[in-house]
Amino acid sequence: MDVARTGVVEQKRRKRWMLAAAATVAVVLVTVVIAGLEPAAPSVDRDTLWIGTVEQGEMLRQVRGHGTLVPENIRWIPAPSVGTIERIAVQPGAQVQPEDILLELSNPEVEQAALDAVSALKRAEAEYESLRVTLLSQELNHQANAAEVEANFVQASLNAEANRELAEKGLISSIHLRASEAVRKSITTRRAIEEKRLAMTAQANAAQLDAKRAEVDQQRGLTQLRIDQLESLKVRSGLAGVLQQIPVEIGQQVMPGFNLARVADPTKLQAELRVPATQAKDLRLGQKVMIDTRNGIVPGTLARIDPAVRDGSVAVDVRIDAELPQGARPDLTIDGTVEIERLENVLYVGRPVHAQEDATIGLFRLDSDEKHATRITIRLGKSSVSTVEVVEGLQTGDQVVLSDTSRWDDYDRIRLK
Image (tube, rainbow, N blue to C red):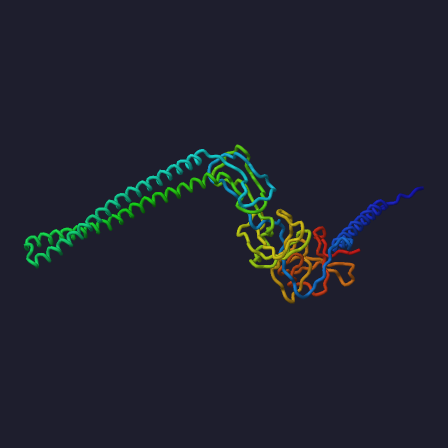
């Protein structure tokens, strides 16, 4: 006879619940433990990293810019007046001298004005010559009158003297003597008047000639101006050098001041650099610059700093202080390094990627075993092209990773292999 067993099912069910609860607790505990663990340090190939060593001593602050070689002497030749391009005599790239004609313009109004001015000058000169002859004739007439009066004065003086001698001897009457003396006195007065008239005539004639001569000179200057304007339609270089541009075509009409050509002296070049605006605040005139022409390095001096910022950079001009290497020519691409200052006895290291001066950043410093690197916070000071001052967080001899480590921002430690 079978005996029924009671409570067995309940015991099995209870046992299963206890096991499930234990498993759940175990999973929770493992999760908590794992969550409390730090993530495993990623492995990084050491050869792919840029590692720098902290040093102490003199740090040279520099600013780097890129640019081109440009001529010091550049001449843009403007159109002298409204005109039409009739002929282009020289093509860009040719060597030119100051008197060489580059192109010719035409302007009928300028040509007519020159002809009218020449005619007016000839007319003014003819009028001056006619006036000079007329005044000279008048002056000669006055001189003739004066000479006649002078002769009459001499004759009257002689008569008066002779009559006085005769009157003293009683040969003529006193009335006859007084009559001769009256004639002499009258002629003496006339003689003085003629002398004054002759002097005044000379002064008046000189004044009239001076006034007319001034008109002639004025017309001569105007005529020369018109001739120069006509001559300026033949556009000349004005500078010995190389013709670089002629941005016009035959038949094109241009306005006064329009740039017709550009001539540059290729023997005197300077460097034109563009420096990032964030680094341009320390630039000063007279600072030393080293220019890399890709075919040699030459020294220079900072000569001009553009006060405006364009496209995030500042333009500067550098005077070349030595002979340029062979192959240096206008528009050659160059690099320039400006020496800002020398910092004495400071901690410095290679400039980390994306690091800015006076900033606080995180870097990986190599541990003593040189197999791991731990992230630390450092404070930077003044920066240069390839180095930066360390103000706080590092010591001499420390090695830090300078390359981009943004992919490991979630880790405080990396392993080097």
